[in-house]
Amino acid sequence: MIDPGFGVSIPRLYAYHRALQQAAAEGKSTITSHSLAALLGQTIAPTQIRKDLCALGAHGRRGHGYAVKPLRGHLAWVLGLERDWRIAVVGFGYLGHAFATFITARETRFSVVSLFDRSPHVVGQVWQGVRVRDVAQLQRVLRGTPCDIGVIAVPSQAAQDVAELLAASGVRAILNFAPTTLQMRATQTPVVVRNIDLAGELSILTHRLSVGSMPAVEEA
Image 1 (tube, helix red, strand yellow):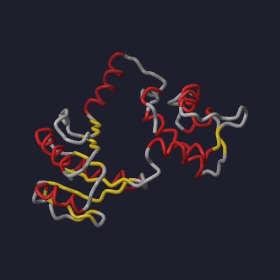
Image 2 (image 1 turned 30 degrees about the vertical axis):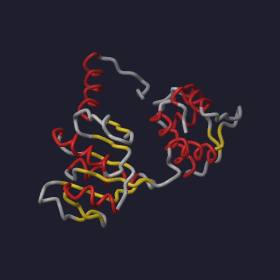
Image 3 (image 1 turned 60 degrees about the horizontal axis):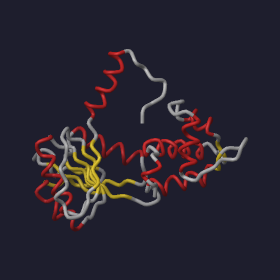
């Protein structure tokens, strides 16, 4: 996997992998950094692309660029996308439902196999063959249906308890959409946590609009 000391942005690497998938679908066998930048809408400069790929040991041929298939495979390995990942979503309201629908339609390597909620109006519903279970059954269900990643889409006051339940059930990575910081230091086995604060992301845009600073290149 990638050495953290390289300082390479994982979101950028994922963007390259996605662009290479598009290039392969278009029948391209090689691609230059400038063409990759074009597929990414010029949000990442060609020089940055070359720097990132060089840090991973990928070197293109001058005048020809990079071989699409090997580079895509190498990035898939670096990103852990060469295998399938099982996901449990806790909180199947608007956000949880939207996430599950999006990730299932978009990414073939991610499968939503368990759904949980507390609302009696939601528990018992069936989504794409998966029945929504009560959160109280989470540990029992995940013992029989192990998951790699847990997605938290519950109110902030419930997020910590849910995170601890997921960790106790063997989940080792959590994507947290609740607007709160999770404290996972007490868990016996390390749990990787990624917090996604949607309001915070919007505040970055409102700040840029307010101060009139409009960068041409996307921040990563």
